[in-house]
Length: 166
Image 1 (cartoon, rainbow, N blue to C red):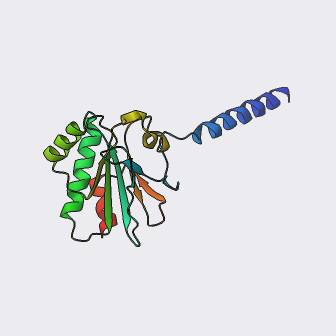
Image 2 (image 1 turned 90 degrees about the horizontal axis):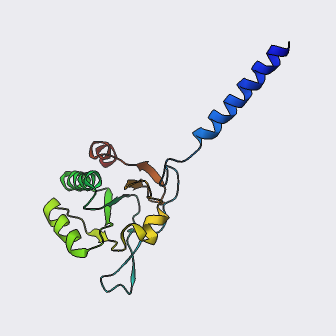
Image 3 (image 1 turned 90 degrees about the vertical axis):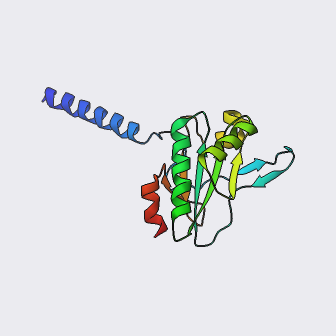
């Protein structure tokens, strides 16, 4: 009988520790969260611009990247190309670079042929309020938002994006 109690205690403790560890977020915002506002300073640094378009019935693809991060840069370029090739335009892309120098950002956009009306640079880089608001401390990400600003997909690939375009 004494061994049965100990076995029960061990099972209870192990189930509680595994339950607690599953609920920890892996960094950044998660699917189901409401995306924070995206405000970017203009070139003069004086005025804040609301970067998220107000769209009814459309998705917004919010892509965070930097020229020095090869994976995020490639992901941003492939998503931009997928949207450019799509026949249906029910997704608006907002691309935000965390490059500290505008000249580096502009050259990267030119080389990668990023064509989006909403392509911004946050020159404060990883020290910016936007970087902290989206909790990007573990790298860059992209988020697909519905028309209410709710995150419906995270780190979506160009192939996965095509299912939302149809």
